[in-house]
Image (cartoon, rainbow, N blue to C red; front, side, top):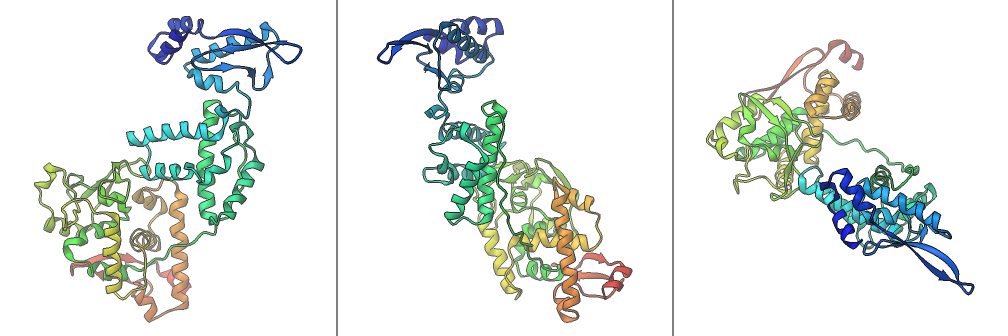
Length: 433
């Protein structure tokens, strides 16, 4: 039987007829006597894989019941389920094999393989491992079985997280990760259903934005040799990881192909697919084309060198270095502090909505999987228009919206030439003013 169990470890390599023949030799019915009266009980012996003493706590008191359970276990193993996992299903609810930490470690082992193959973000894997470490936020379930999961247990956990000082946003993220774990168990057939999760209210914070003129002031404050990647972030609305991963071969005839991103903040972070898993082909602004012509050697295309190399190293930009350069430029432009993401992607998208770009076009350009993400910028644009009513005149111009109703504005570009053109609808602006 031990030999059959070892062969079953590689059972997927055998045809079904051979697997069934191997399974037929797996497990034996044995008996023992318990108690003062010596009551006979039956159990199933699958050593070295393990033994089954009961059907989830219900003792087997006759041979027919033991035989039915043995046949059922053999059927499940023949369906290509590991012996150890099948045996765990028939242990008592509170047995170690059914406890949450046991299954979380199996879940993480699969997630690690996914990260190694490039289908899972290393950053997300790191977050999961942090939640599951000793003393982490999943430690609340250390002594609980996966079969004891209920809304009540999850609600108690959410309150426990709050007592730990977690913000609502962090609580929501932890619950989302645990929901992914329970959903995985459900898909495997280990849980009959995933319980309802408590709702965590998170106050949504609208990101800050700056106008196009102020954005160009920041870009002009960045040294020319470093400016290229920031032009891509500001003019194309790219995510920093996407811009960092671009190669010279991704640029051709005024278009850039975005099909990958750096999955981490360091230069050694792996490069995988984009956040949505989709590729995009985007037109490049004239300013960015001019910068590429001045700074990028065509020969670098053969070396698949970075399109926007860090001038200090010649390699990929680290994320923190981008943030430092941006912060210095914001200070030099004498603007209030604004993050790299908000000052580039958010400000770019909000300006596009204000110029009347259809949301479906903007959704495609930004690579949003869900149109709701794009509609958030419409709300930001509305807020910006209200700011116009409260602070007209000079403040309006400082926000980057110079000009009057129905007039076309051209901001001065970073390199001195004409820049992005924006046209406002006269009736809309008449109503606002």
